[in-house]
Length: 428
Image 1 (tube, rainbow, N blue to C red):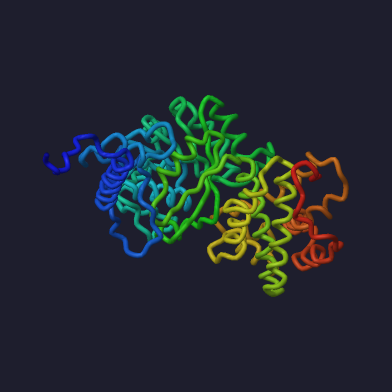
Image 2 (spheres, one colour):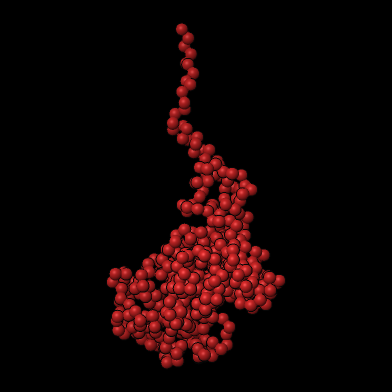
């Protein structure tokens, strides 16, 4: 009788099959990732969104369905390609955002004020007045005709200063395609209605579309120069926020998402007023101790107002709150800080406004914030709860000179430094 061991023709054990499956999957994923290795050296870079990468690269080999599903995010649909973006406005930040989108290979049209400026941008690849030393990407074009800019836009980016937004939107509203989502990069409060941009947009463009709001420490020149920048996009539509993050993100422009629209808008507005106070402190040569203390207490006022209006504490402590405040209060490119410095050196608001062609949103916002707080408040002695916001307005109005105003703020009653307030217990 033969002693040979018979050949076992039964299937491989289940755990062996699983190991082989994992190994094959790993090889496919590694080979796929290697085909997208970025060329930029030593950048803090994550690969482009898998959804965008897969949707925009039809020439690459088709991946097995299970690999595609693993690479995809949890979003329910891919960005529509080809995408076309219209950017409303021709100022510094409009140019920066248009360049950011265009560098990702997306056709971008700037809607500017006049045909002469549009022609200059299209022929010279740079704006004739704003950041004219920096060239725009080839994918950026410009027009003064709203129908041309908007007729086939997939997304619209609004970058017109808040105080001019309502009139501008009314002029172009009939050209805005139905249901096209709008991303607002404008920060502040309208002085006439005391409304934030989310209210202005819905009133002028309707509620039958989705809106998102961008904020964070983001100087336009640094964005144009491709210096590392991080911002947040907030929307009640999480899918829209995710899609816009895909649209804008690059190795040097990182976009986080949020659903806290109120927090992002409050932070983006109040920080400009705090920056004016920081500049005043700098103009008076009061030192960094005083400046840092002033900015910190300004953030406490931002938090108080934000919580009362329903913002999340984490938002106010994030990029659109404290982050944007730091950049605006201490950054050399900050228009609001520079405005405050000139106030601190003895110039009046009227003198500074007559001598500049750039908008310092904090000036109008300081007036609007005080009116907003007074209108919503049920308390008294609001100047003690918001000494910096009220103090900046008094200085702007000429009721106090810069030194008197700062001395008044520094002379405010000392009390417990409370940052533990919650939405339930905060009072405006």
